[in-house]
Amino acid sequence: MSTALSTSTALSPSTGSSAAGTATDPAARIDALRGEIDACDAEIIALVRRRLAISQEIGSLRTASGGMRLSLSREQRVLSRFRDALGPDGSTLGMMLLRQGRGRL
Image (cartoon, rainbow, N blue to C red; front, side, top):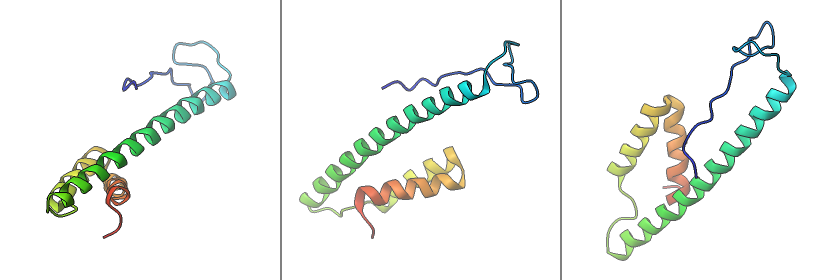
């Protein structure tokens, strides 16, 4: 999986042409950008599934070794990382991922 982001030429809102000055069809550009979003979504889904499997294995290992199913300090670090990277909604996203991996408390 590639982590490189695609760079795209922005359209001028008033002319419908790209910053480079070449005319483009806005509908075609929108379709292309939506295709990029769909590809991003597929990668996100794959990563969430991978994260879920890893999280469940960690939980199983922790409980099998007599530990607690979760680590609140670890969860706080995860939430902070999401909030710092994505703002207030990042905390919500982080919490959704944590809940999916361990279930509701």
